[in-house]
Image 1 (cartoon, rainbow, N blue to C red):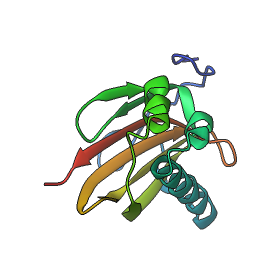
Image 2 (image 1 turned 180 degrees about the vertical axis):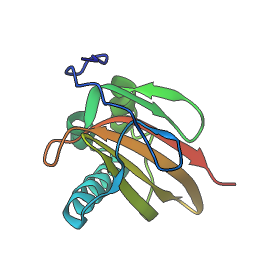
Image 3 (image 1 turned 30 degrees about the vertical axis):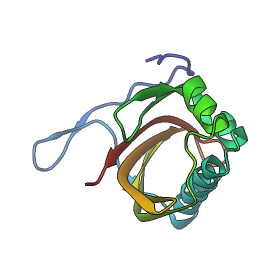
Length: 150
C-alpha cells in the first residue's frame, strides 16, 4: 500500500511493458461522455464561482492536500486559494474554457485546456492542467497549474 499525504491509502499499481518495450504504470483512457461531462461541469461551476467571489465551491472541491501553481508562478495551498477567492483576487468579468480534454487513470482524472478570463478591457489566457482524485460523484481537486500565454 502507498499512502499519500492527507488522503486515504491506495493500492500500488503493477507495472507492465507495452508492445514498444516501454514500461507502463497505469492504463490511461479517454473519459466516457458522462465522466467527461461531470468533470467539465465541475470546472465550469468552479471558474464561475471564482469570478463571482463565492468560495463555497472551492471549499468543497479542493482536497485538503490541494496544491496549485498560479499563472503568475505563485504556489497556493487550499487555504490560500479559498482566501484569494473570498478577497476577490480572482475577479474577472467573464470566462471561457476551450480545447478541453479529460483523461482517466483508475481513480485519477486529468483535465487540460485553455482558459480565457476577461478583466475589464484586458484578457488573460492560460493553459491549465488539473488533477482530480476520487470517483464519479466525489472528485477532489488535488493539483492545478496554469501557464500564461503571451
